[in-house]
Amino acid sequence: MFLTSARLNSNMTDRQIYEDRMMHRLSRFLMAALKHVAFIRIHAPCFISLFARVFIAKPVPTFARHALAVVSQQVVVAISIIAWSSTVSADGRIPMIDAHSQIDHLVNLDVVLPTMDRAGISRVIHSTRGKRKLSDIVQLAKRHPDRITASMRLKGRIYEKNRPEYHKRLQKMRNGRFGGMAEALIWHAKKGKKARQVKVALSAPQVQAALKIAKEKGWPFIVHIEFAAAGKNYAKYMNAFENFLREHPNHPMALIHMGQLQAGEVARLIDAHQNIYFLTSHANPIVVKKSNQPWVNLFSGQKLKPDWIKLIREHSDRFILAFDNVWAEHWGDFYVDQAKLWQKALHGLPPKAAYAVAHGNAERLWRLASAN
Ligand SMILES: [Zn+2]
Image (cartoon, rainbow, N blue to C red; front, side):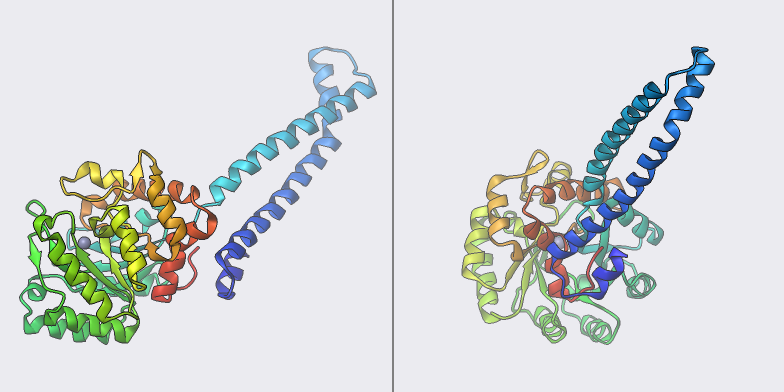
């Protein structure tokens, strides 16, 4: 019932959706509890006298039987209240959208949905890489329109070298069933044997051609620049990126992996540019622990760090939850654990900020149906 009402009425705010869900759960719970309490009040005296006859071999006076029945009724009410409070936290799960993940040819497509279910992820804006066919993600999105949004792929050698095949693929996807566009690699450090170094200027024709389509479709443009890994080229990349933001002041630009930036720099960029957004992928201890790259970690232990909480509270419209799952080994506990960590962290934020980061911003920017 809740699911339908939330979907039908897209004008509801997140807070209203949350309250609607809670009221629905509460009324269902109260009905069930009343049934149990009435059952115990009626039947407990009979059970008590039966028990007494069998084990004590003595009849129990009527007043004692009724007194015991009242006591057991109270016990059930207490247990129910405890059960209800645990249901609230279990069912108070904040719907989460993963605004950027990928699959290559080595990922078994059949694990994607079950892993999302285990992680509590409502929807993934999903792209391909490696030898994975574009049509696979389009088909997956077609089969699960409420869970998967196919996202146009930019990366690959044909992108890096600005080959005609890249532009052909871009036009083909432009006419296909896509609902977003995946990251444009601008500065990408080499990652072991799996991912090579990529350097493409924001002004390069392959980037501009993609941006043109993102603007035409009204999708955020996702930029991958590893500012921490850029080292001595940090200022050069920052200048180029800020010029890019200024050139397109009305188009949302999202820095994936938080741009590997620290809170102070993120705050400065938010104040300076109305069109900058941040995707939270990789910026958590589970990824940081497994990687030798200078990803920023928004967490201290299991909790968001105070300076990030402050920033997210003040600018909750600028942060978008994402995981950027890529390899086959990611589509399992690695994904589930990160999602659980974020689910917990989101509960530490005021509801308005938590809902915005978890799903509201993605729904608004990519015009998605309300997540459940
Ligand atoms: Zn990336």
